[in-house]
Image (tube, rainbow, N blue to C red; front, side, top):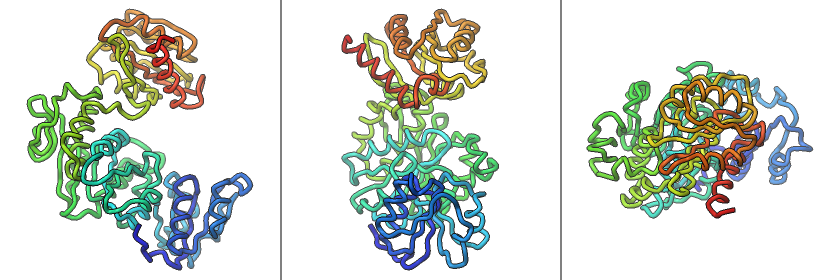
Length: 454
């Protein structure tokens, strides 16, 4: 890591611990800053506060005293989840004290070049795609950011022999000053996090920070099929690389004669993509462009496009049993997410759905159920509601069971060769599971038990 002196002997407040705040406090202490940590959780219950206190960091827990932000404070490092209307954040802004997130710290100390990925949908898939595509290439990839690894922690281990591949949320990108990835990827815009940002315009402005500091020596890969994206990138100074599933983009990434084509290099036929759906073709094109710019090998990129199983619980391909393909989409906790999943398949679908009853309507599923689903198995608190919707959609076989394990077995029993068996619940998991991950793991375990004859 670069031992920068920007924070040496400076007074820095780290607001909010969790993983990002803890790593920020440790790094700033290493950079010889005068660090104070402030976290809402009481000290007696706060293992992370006790941990950073042991290395010499001042810790204040249980409340957010107003006096922590005064004229002697040089920087405030904010946990991304903390809103900008927090009293201490508002006070720092009023005093013109820089309010940053740990992504800025990562950029300042990293010896490795960075690829940054943002957008409303597809960030995790595209980030993971790029990481796998870079394996065996010119530089070893390190994944970081919103994907689960704190960026400033990863950056401390990165060298010039690495490439940092960072998933970046709008929350993280609001708190940057000089952050500038070598390659930026902007995927799409839909209305999201408006409770945090206040408006769609503010949300877009936050996302634009991924490329605002780039120069013409850098690259900006953008979705030419998204009109908002195509408009906002016009203000960027980097070399612009478009990707599209609908238009010919010879200077970027697109589909030509049925082939994924990047910089006029044919990769694979679209029909050989391991992940279904046009949205995943778009993610694959964006990822392939980024990987090629960062020194990825074309054979590895082709291999990943053909074999990538997807991100766990997000339309994840888990295997095949007697010519039926099983997909785990447990992350689909609402109707729009299940609609997106159903649109991804051309083969007949046996759908497993159900979960917590939030009192919401499932009528939005009807057109997709009519078009794609041959059988539907429902379970959990919403099994009656979902069964009713399936019958109104004209699904030929509709069955209700009590548990996801029973639903998975029933789905297989009522499937035919070449069917897709899809868990895409359209509901939260909390009626029977603690998390959607636990739900997806149950589905996956049941599949493997069936495959092994248990």
